[in-house]
Length: 386
Ligand SMILES: Nc1nc2c(ncn2[C@@H]2O[C@H](COP(=O)(O)OP(=O)(O)O)[C@@H](O)[C@H]2O)c(=O)[nH]1
Ligand SMILES: Nc1ncnc2c1ncn2[C@@H]1O[C@H](COP(=O)(O)OP(=O)(O)O)[C@@H](O)[C@H]1O
Image (cartoon, rainbow, N blue to C red; front, side, top):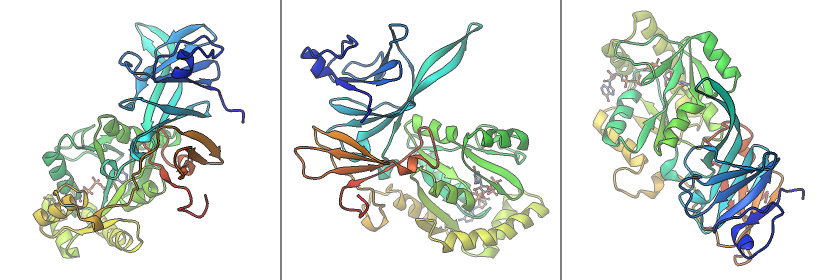
């Protein structure tokens, strides 16, 4: 099949040579990508952080810079090289939302004490996201109370949620801080960065550019927090078609008059800008409530009542209302598995289990690169295509 060879620690401990004379520790396995052998896993990996690299061209071990959060333990895993930049790591005997990991590999230039040198950088990302980890997209017309509700969540659950700080070309309002509420930028710079592929999504809203950088989402995920995105309906649509597996919530006002009242009472916009926001609100309300883009629609009438409903959707009120839960299936993988790639699908086989599991890589092509994805995984036969 032309796949890069994979070696396992226990085979090597049993004296099987891998041709590179690499000494692997228990629960380590290795895979070759170009000139480099990536050794992944191991019990005591606090130094290597889950990855060490043997560079065949220099005959030396390299400890890479490791980004992202690594899997918390390796007691058996299978590797597959997907291309020169990406290794698939499937941990055995774990739940589906814990078993699929990607390791992006490559080099980057770093500057240290006036010297510029190339160094290995690897980046961990989780492939399948459980319901409780899914990012939250909140949309709704200007003045409806999105920011207010998000602030309430962040204040009540500071360690659980992190805000995706968007970029915008609009001017800061009083009390808005660069890097906290938005990254304030200008059109030329932002357009360049969009071209360079740094954005998960972007849109023109009320005459300004707004966008979510991939980094904004990854910073939150890397801090082990659940990401909240406050973006418009166009942005929500882009995220829907990306591989960021989010939960989509649309906030409505109780009436158009009330929306106008709140927008004026906030006192942050000129009359001209208020009129522009109200004109756009009509279209946003139509799109938000009619096209099935959103998983949940919340009317922000009474603030406290709306906040309670939001918490219920997010499973934060202690109840287990199944009708409000989304349906990511969680199942456990067996201990012994083998991997086969058929087109864009990875088939996870096990001799001891009748059921094959399918990991669908199709959504890795579109949408978010980097550490922001959520892929579909399901028992074979459930869907007609495999
Ligand atoms: N697509 C997209 N929309 C955004 C982003 N950040 C903010 N927005 C939306 O832009 C609109 C205007 O936001 P803002 O200027 O803060 O005004 P406000 O809605 O009146 O508070 C709102 O609908 C936000 O949800 C982003 O990164 N991407
Ligand atoms: N349920 C509510 N009832 C009354 N006023 C509200 C309610 N929710 C928010 N507000 C107020 O409405 C204004 C706009 O809210 P904000 O959170 O800035 O909206 P958005 O972020 O959607 O533009 C703020 O002054 C806020 O205090």
